[in-house]
Length: 166
Image (cartoon, rainbow, N blue to C red; front, side, top):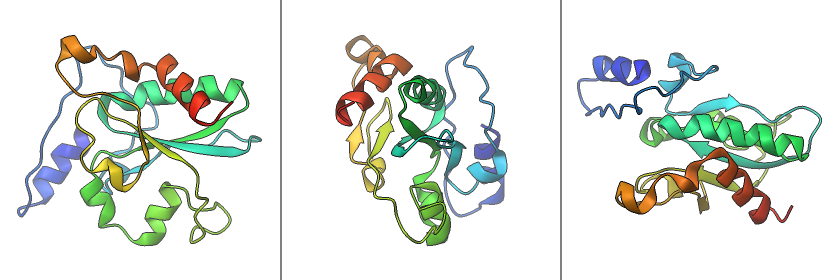
């Protein structure tokens, strides 16, 4: 929220939308206003000692369950990087080297993409995210139709295990 306010105050040429989380949503450790202002950043990197297998991209309140899913998958030996992408428009304005460092550039050489599968968790329409990811983990529709079941940490971990045939 702080990053959206900062972006709104800094820009006189583009609109800013504040999409607020549900009441009682926890504050994420690792979230950074400076990096959110770039449109996207690594909020939880690959766990050490495991082979890098996938990227999990989300925005807003979906980021927390993604981090929980990452921790579950690490216990199974599956390393997933979690990326917070609050504004794909701002992210696309960043230098290519920065984009690669966030969305799968090789840690030794950010200009060499790892070509890992990229999944995104979004409870609303996936518009925009398709530029960065191949698999959508959420669903759109009314609350009675969707009910958030596809975006729990357990559901996301299960979908990633299945997709990666683990």
